[in-house]
Amino acid sequence: MREQSQQRILEAALMAFAERGYEGTTIAQIAERAGVARGLVSYYFPAKEQLLQALLGQALDAILALTDPAEGEDTPDLRLAGIIDRTLESAANTIGVQRLVLCLMLQPGTREIFVGVEAAKADAVEEFERRLQEIFAARGAEDPALEEVLFRSVLEGVIFKVAVYPETYPLAAVRHRLLTMYGLPAGDPPDEPVRPLRAT
Image (cartoon, rainbow, N blue to C red; front, side):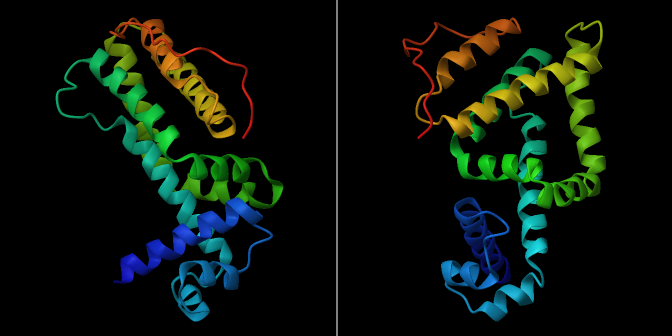
């Protein structure tokens, strides 16, 4: 019950922050949206900042888990293809979270909180980077560390575009292009037309 209540509050906070912004959201509004007493929110999260820290922590944990190999991913190529697929699927299914994280990373009032959460998970971030570098090293990359940075930059760009243009971004075509770019099995290119990106 405790975990369920906390998660319900966090989900309400996510929606409220996404609609009103961090600064424009009150604890009372979060409590009302979660269907709980204001005191319960304050009991679990004594300050609004702690709600934000918990949300960012969950989002970062989800990103770090993308490198966990699925069953059958027993070669570097299959592991890389799996990371691409899981990342794109996660981006498409968690657009609200992605938008919030992007905003919080850039807003002066919340950037410091994001940096603190990232610092608290420094070991996990390093493990994430190490796993990617191992994959690129096993695939024969001349500079695995640089390949890891470039790979993450490409995926983060895709996540940004999906968050901003969810209705018009050609995700299937981009997936196919990413797989072929890294020499991975991609199947036939999708028939999906590439349209001008429009925010919705």
